[in-house]
Length: 471
Image (cartoon, rainbow, N blue to C red; front, side, top):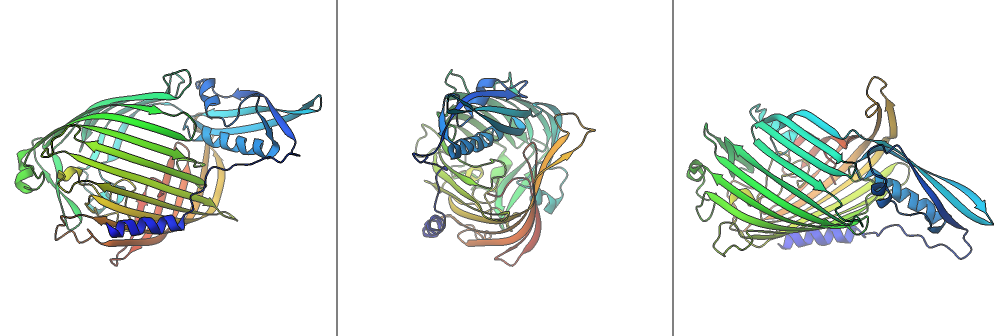
């Protein structure tokens, strides 16, 4: 734990966590009154959802600098809804009786929202883990239907019927606002996942799997969640989830420590609370701003001390982004987690190596542990920024393609702790470092592709592909 807190202290010493831009107008500054706000291009999205994301409203009085800053934040907020491919805001100034007014026009190009489409994806932690084995049985396929911005209210309706490696059947319905003030929302979801192959142990820092003709896992789940978002940047998320997992007996023959209590059935409720404070200019590929969250999870609500699921954990992400001069950018991010128990079922003992929680250069590995700290840093240079490619042969929702390309230089560090290390898992309780350089491509519909060459502190070099931003 000392190493975990040392990494956190080093990061907080590096990053002075800036607050949202604020301007104070001087007494002599000329005041501008916001008159009318007109919307164009929102054929589906309701007006009130757009006005909800604006940093100003009709009747506001601001100095010129504050007005321009409010327009900038409003454009960023609208772009971060993922409802539009393009957002443009223009102000038109005029004078009446020696008072200056501004009319605002907002031009929007909506995305395509309905996606009934065949599904084909890799059933691995990341593309690099799949490429290492090139196992074509680890491919999911099926039908995925999603209707974003359902009814023009930013609701999301999703269904999945998936075969292949992870057989999945489920649905999700998200309503971001259920009250007139647009501050309360809810989400409802349920499904079934079943597998012929499961990961039952980690050996030599890599997951080990077993496959059978019978199903080795049945996983039923259902959840309901509520959100509170009283202002644009801060939100609270509350979730109650039910999980029912049933593993085949062969899993415990292969790894008797899969569950410390030797139970192949896991039937439990979880409570999750998430606080987010998001001031990024672009949530998909941020270049300026900051982000903070705190995630508190209790798995095994109402469980006795001897239950096979009884875990309390806290995770936090802190990220800061700086726009430097001459197309240079810098970003730093910290992720840390602490948990109250070492006697976790194997499938809940997840440390580094999943989603974006890994040191670059260690993409092929997983590091099990109850607690970890991770720091990532990126220095970027904009090779091509704010470009638009016209493809007239495509439908109107797709024929204008925004894109950008960045060169990046990065360095990461992490430490994961466990009180029950396994002899072959040599990366546990060990400081990890990685660095390298790469190219990042960013485009519409939240597309991010990172191509990176890395070097780590166990002497390995490699080329890796990732499909999300690193920080």
